[in-house]
Length: 319
Ligand SMILES: Nc1nc2c(ncn2[C@@H]2O[C@H](COP(=O)(O)OP(=O)(O)OP(=O)(O)O)[C@@H](O)[C@H]2O)c(=O)[nH]1
Ligand SMILES: [Mg+2]
Image 1 (cartoon, rainbow, N blue to C red):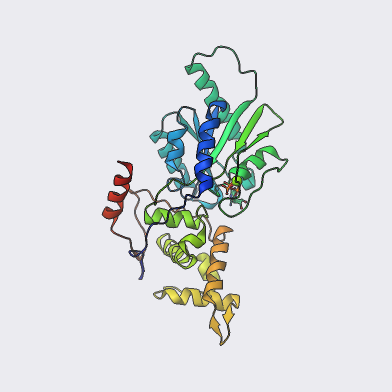
Image 2 (cartoon, rainbow, N blue to C red):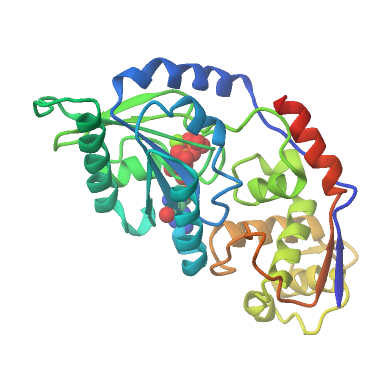
């Protein structure tokens, strides 16, 4: 049995000035667009959705894209997609793996279908004689610019495995009858619940240094135990069953040759390495958002801050 204690962790919000401006820019451009494409990370479909974006764009049809599906468990991605479709009116969903170019066609097909239905609902009778316009929004680092590049093929917008790569809006015209608006990633203002914040840090939607890399590695390892996802740890020589957290980091540090003077393990370097391995998908498919109805399956206890206190804080914020 291994225990993890996160009860001391405080929520970490991240809402720098450029996100406030980006939100204003989205409101301004909204009247120009035909459909809003909201990207979320398939590993955290709820934690990385930013419901505020759904609220401010709800006058338009919305296509929810669960991207990075290559990093999430297929069955759970489908379950979450159906959940989102039933939760929000006016929405459809598509599951994508942008880097492998999977699901791209469904995005353009679904966008066209949503626009057609919307125009019909509004009584439009003539065909649209201009390119259709899609605005791409979402939290940082979910793959908005990558999606646009994959659709565009000319690779004109910058991407990177960090939050905040795109800093301003940019229209991109595709060869066929479509225009795309890339936007900077936007977090909801305020502090998320602690576990939601840790998930956002792990997927790089929030700067990892703001949360602390040690804490994120501990959270990652707690999730590996929760999902009984041991293969990558075993490949470093970690022996199971494990009861001692330090043994995991020390084993990986020894395997990688990360040493400090005096032959001590270089834990900081090891933690940075583990997070890079996670970002590169080396720990395999793992969905972090867990539906409340699903059962935890493993021999691990994880302590969280008093959920009631957190829930009350959330409600206060909304009222
Ligand atoms: N594994 C995987 N990685 C992806 C996928 N799509 C994008 N990425 C990677 O995710 C990282 C972020 O991609 P970006 O396109 O820059 O994300 P963004 O949403 O534009 O980010 P900001 O501009 O910072 O808001 C990059 O390293 C991409 O290579 C995917 O489907 N699967
Ligand atoms: Mg971008």
